[in-house]
Image (cartoon, rainbow, N blue to C red; front, top):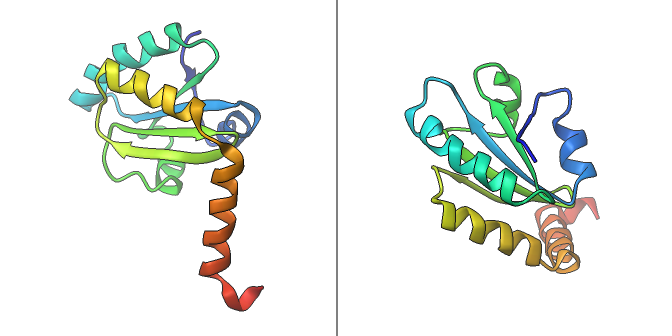
Length: 127
C-alpha cells in the first residue's frame, strides 16, 4: 500500500479509524527527510495492514505545530487512535520494522489503563 498524504482535514479521521498508523513529518528541503522517504515507502509496501501517512510540515504548518514537531523528520506511531511513539530522526529499515512489530504487539487495554491513571494523577482536583 502506498503512503497517504495527511492534512489537517483528514489527520484525525485517519488516525482514529485505522488500527496502526505511522506518520512521517517531513519537508522537501530536509535532506534526512528525503533520505528516509524510500525506507518509509518500502515499509508501506511491506506492511499493507499499517497506514503510512506523510505530513508535509511546510504545507501543513498548523498540523505540525499542533503535533509539537520541533525537528524533522519525526516519526509518530498511533495504535487504535492513541499516540504510542514519537521520535525525531530517521529510522533504519530494521528499526522501522521493529517499531511496527512493537506497536502491533502492544496490549492496548493496559496502555489505556496507564493513560487513565496518568490523567487522574494530573487532575486530582477535577475528579
